Length: 91
Image (cartoon, rainbow, N blue to C red; front, side, top):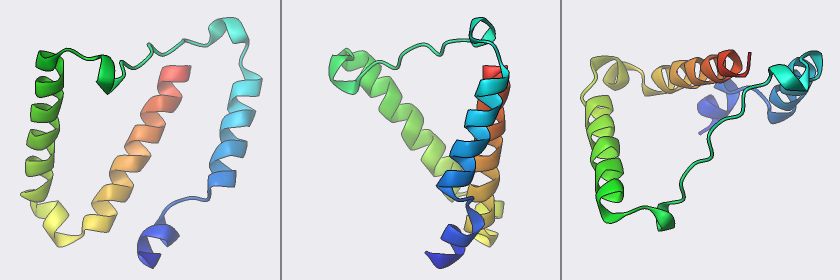
């Protein structure tokens, strides 16, 4: 677990960076994310679809050659992509 902890940025760094970037933007320019539907409020078909999608994504990840070679690096890359995408969505 230590290599994973070392690869990830500190929470305080992420919070301070996000606070600075949000403070620089006007409130009117920020896009609101649609609220997530709670699992308990989903219909049965929605739950089944969500689970099927997650299982397919998990299987694809497990069989990925890059994941087999270096799982921590791949997870770190995915987290960075996700954080960058969220930053772009806020702009």
